[in-house]
Length: 307
Image (tube, rainbow, N blue to C red; front, side, top):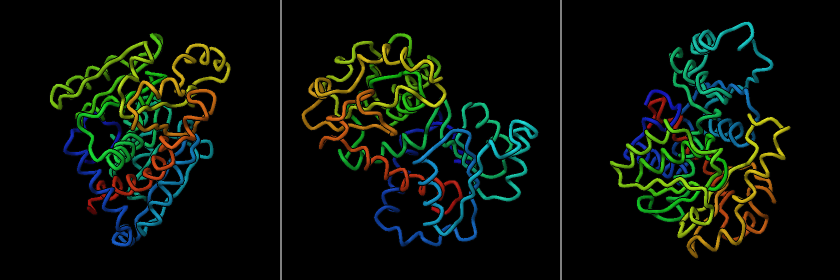
């Protein structure tokens, strides 16, 4: 594992190994407090963030290293300097690079030109660190992954959905995506996931019926209707398009009685989910958020050959 740009090339063994590593780090953090002494991470941000920035920065600190925050608006990247030159120059200073950007092609250009590991902290197309953290959380709550059913309701054509489909297919989880026809997942991503599903025995279903998607689900998952790349002027249009895919009590009743609710956050109560869902006992959204820290520490250590 040289870089992590998406879950396209990840199989069950890789994911389960990383989950095991993250669990060990979470249980015994003191064993890793000097693992990255004198190591530096460059964090490049084109999109805003709470969880990604804080979890990576805290993670590097807890591992004995250091993180540098760079906002693209305060840098020459994309204006006076190319992505490839940024990658080459930064590799001379830092030991690892994490970037949160709009275009997947920019992450790939970073990875293709850097001589140090590159981590995708989010693009419009993929969000691998989030999904790896989510799988860690599900494993903690359900004691397994294979054979579970995850239902995602909302925008099928976004970074969370794409890597969820890939991740679930890899580990043998069934996934049912309930979304409008206008927001179906990209076919090329689905084609890759279906190949993974043949190996793992996973079932992938895309439907326009939210109740069908949620039926007998072990996990109900949703995400914001207004991703960072969606213009604010489209908000009312998006609400009309996605209102039938809101996770509410009626939807949760379609899932299993012991189902859990997930949202990668930030969340808007009254939009993608109701307040009585996200704030109920079935909701594990803050456990989910915390596990970003533990999984990202595992990712960094794995990429740097420290575990």
